[in-house]
Length: 176
Image (cartoon, rainbow, N blue to C red):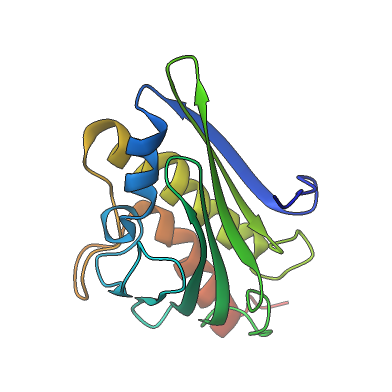
């Protein structure tokens, strides 16, 4: 099992009154909490899936590990953000969900290994991940309904607003 230095990688943790298996099933239901437009298989080890959100973000992810009720790990194979200059920031990073039994419920620890404070996307990405993980995924686990990005043309979820603001600031820099 990979050890993660939490001070160098983005990590967030929450607890729910559901079983670790229920949490695992929600994590692998990527369309239920991240984006309704995800293409590909999201619940089989070795599978590759594709995420995109309008012209803001697109990425290719491979599922590297699935341990039912315990762990999900992904590797980012390719990535593009329209609001940063260095498009290599997410490439080769790992996204890890560790699920443990806690007091009759489940604790979910999300770590984006390689998403570090030195990256241009860090503030926007950690804000968005917080919305997806602490909000949408948690709600999917506890209520059966998340708040993923809608299919193309739907309303923008609140956690996408910071990416939109960063993109505008990059395209239209403030006068000095």
